[in-house]
Length: 297
Image 1: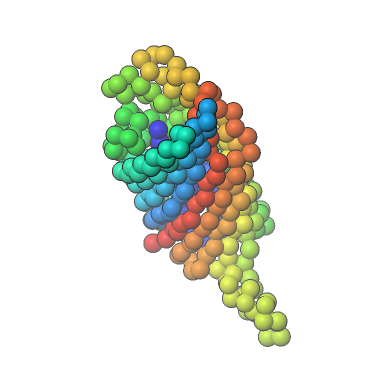
Image 2: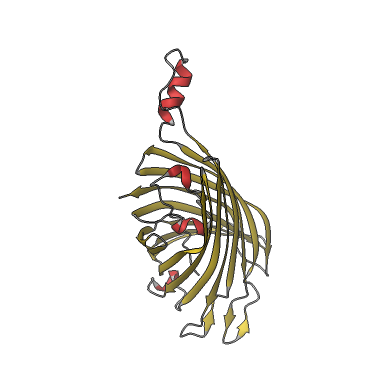
């Protein structure tokens, strides 16, 4: 399966861009510059059945490069590295396993010219995105087949502080040389956010707490709340559906993105699953947190 979740956003003018973290629409919400992003994303899964249990912790550390080669066109290339720790319990026996390797490479291109309207202190934009995932990863971290993604991204910003992003993406999975397909996937997200920035010139009679606040937020920060939904079809083997695969999940992901400088951003987000409708018996996602940085050249 694909383990990568990207969210690369431009920093050139932090007051003019919604800063989605978990939502895939965050990959390319900027134009006209080069951005490098990396992060550590930790996913924890659990599987319990007939007295046995399995705990799975997945660490994803990708490197993504985003390049705005035209005011309306952006390209993203990403390469993840994945580590998985598995702890299995059966009766009094405990077994541990650690595996790691490269995931499949991904490339996306976004076009921001479907609809665009700028107003004083705000913008409205509808973009289209196309993506390709190639089977370049290690065997246990690769689908072994190409995947193709298409989607739409809507952005709305008002009064320089309030931002909203929504997106829908659909991924078409193809069959690998072993006759296995992981199943098509759909992602949908809604991301309201609020931008906070201190005064340019702190008041001379301000309290020490206010002075600390003004200094800490002199370049601003985003406080966001993401609603992330995903659906996946049954995997198929030799044309037959795999019973213990696919399903629907919904998560709420509060997060913060802090600008220590105008070209550098650090971010944190914690995803809380609120609904899970999985087919058959599968490991259930119990938590996800992400800590990372983005640097704009």
